[in-house]
Image 1 (cartoon, rainbow, N blue to C red):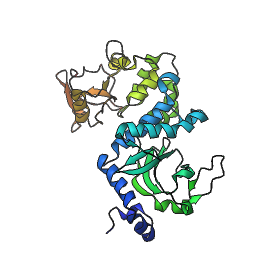
Image 2 (tube, helix red, strand yellow; image 1 turned 90 degrees about the horizontal axis):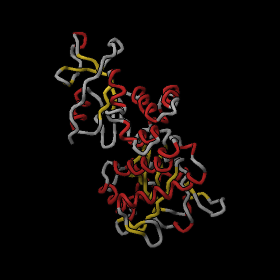
Image 3 (cartoon, one colour; image 1 turned 180 degrees about the horizontal axis):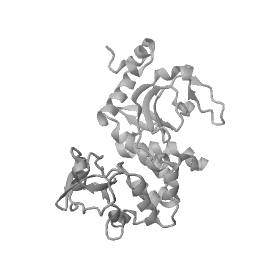
Length: 320
């Protein structure tokens, strides 16, 4: 029995070869022990893409709107941000030392597009892929061997992994879910409605109207508001909570009390920095059997198209 899942390699020969590479297995084990489900890795990739888009300043949400120089810089940012998150030791010849092994980090937004420098031959590469359009990401380990590479035709002679030798990649995580870029994937007409106003506050109000029952992260808020006090624009006292209350829409944040309301209504509970909006209605006879929550001393349910808008209740006090 090999000390890793057999599905990591596409044929028995490759599995045997990978299983004999003790350094590869040591790095694999170290990374999996630090991040068993890949949650931290996924967060780094999401945050790095958002960092490049810089929505608060630029209003951008689409990878294709990045300049060529920014896209080129993505690999460096992924490398830096992974090291910051996991505190990898600096390598001597490569980017990192993981489990005492030299490891180079290579990122590509196109699967299989990793550009490997000639000096990485013989070393292990951490190959990372994330695609904001597919909302997926992968990361795996690859021992760089000349016979497994396409010859470089670019000026700096960088190499790529031959398609037929991608079975030599020992996957850490494969085709995992990347947190969805709400603005990129929302209905175009809804997105146009959000961006129809010059006012950051009005854009946020429209966002919470149009994107209900889904988690909306801090970066989305920042990108739509394009204001330094963007989180204030969500709250009551003139923010979106106040503006949408007459329409029956509540906006739950990451407070424990708000998370509890969301769970009682069958909605995703907001994680740190997230919000979930939903239109609610007082529970009536036709809501029999529907999940509900108690707010302002009354039972409330998620509103349906049959429920007329009514003023929303107040959410519980903000407690963590």
